[in-house]
Image (tube, rainbow, N blue to C red):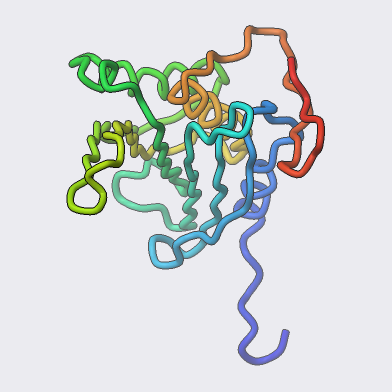
Amino acid sequence: MTVGDAPPAPAAFRRAVASMHPAEVRPEIELEDIPAPQRLAPYSAAIGASVYRDDDELAIGRLIMLFDPEGRNGWDGQFRLVAYVRADMEPEITEDPLLGPVAWSWLTESLDAHDAGYAAAGGTVTKAVSEGFGNKAEDPVTTELELRASWSPLQEDLSGHVAAWCDLMCLAAGIPPLPPGVAALPPRRREDPEPFRT
């Protein structure tokens, strides 16, 4: 190692990062590595995702993994996952007073369905209405759901947590989860001329 080189990341962090890259994802989802915030923990990694139906982007999200070998107060361990999901919603859905609890249950039930053990979960669900004015007055009113959450995984293999986050994004986009035993098709690239369809 030369002067100025950063020390190698701990093995536990490297294994966790590797587990964030699933071999298979649903064909509606595109995953990519994105820059992770550097000041929240000594080590971090992040992935971003978009959910598409045909060429329409229905939801976007990011999942950030934080790692501190010393742990942090409130983390219940060395790892913390921070998730964000935003999806367009029909106005009548965002007016439902139960949308917040239902959206939160999408996360917890997805984690349970993938046997992704977790602790110290918390978050918020926000319903946003955007209305244009001035030279934007003709723009249609849009309504969105935003879910922000964090939790501490109980194991360094994060593959179940990534799968649960992907399911959460699909549910927010109005796409039901795959039934048990049904495999996802290989991910497609946006430039593929004939995308896979189930």
